[in-house]
Amino acid sequence: MIDADHILTARGLDKSFGRGPGRVDVLRGLDVTVRRGEFLAVMGPSGCGKSTLLHVLGLITPADGGELAVDGQAVGMGAAQRHALRRDVFGFVFQRFNLLGVLTAADNVAISLRARGLRADGRVDELFEAMGVADVARRKPSQMSMGQQQRVAVVRALAHRPKIVLADEPTGNLDSANSNALLDLFRRINRDHQQTIVMITHSAEAAAAADRVVHMKDGRILETSR
Image (cartoon, rainbow, N blue to C red; front, side):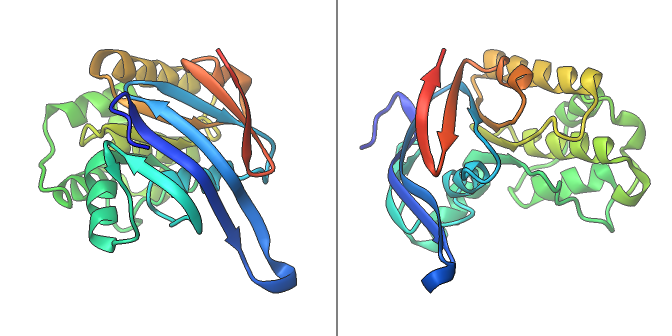
């Protein structure tokens, strides 16, 4: 299953929640591959399993069945391997931001870097500038708008130069200008640094920034465009 050209490969992924009559099958034998350096958008109706797929690919949630390979490694259920890959390979942009409320924006980024044995450098300042949030770097999340929090979360996700960026509706809380700035930044890091991006989105305009778009329905990939 491991292919050097693919940084993510999933075969036959199954994931369900609940038991008995309340069981919900979210992923149903899903297959997907992502090439190294690709910008992939995943689209589909609400409830089709897009966010669950992102969590499974990012090793946050284990699949119930199927096979998964990340950056040339077949992924098992061992906690140590999953943690190391999650820490070293991925950068995450979540719908709910997950910023620590007691820390400033700059400290939210710094603590993420320290967890990886890194320190903030000039790149962090450049990212704050690129996302238009340099002026809130010393503010706590409660002192920021939803859009500012989203953009700070993007800075945190990119600061350690991850091989793969997983973004769940990253433009969902942004106006048109800031959405365009974010997509321009994604295209730039994808082009200049060959960082792979997998982006969940409902927006056809956002998906148009990607190299390839896959469409999900009922827990499966149905079709690929471009």
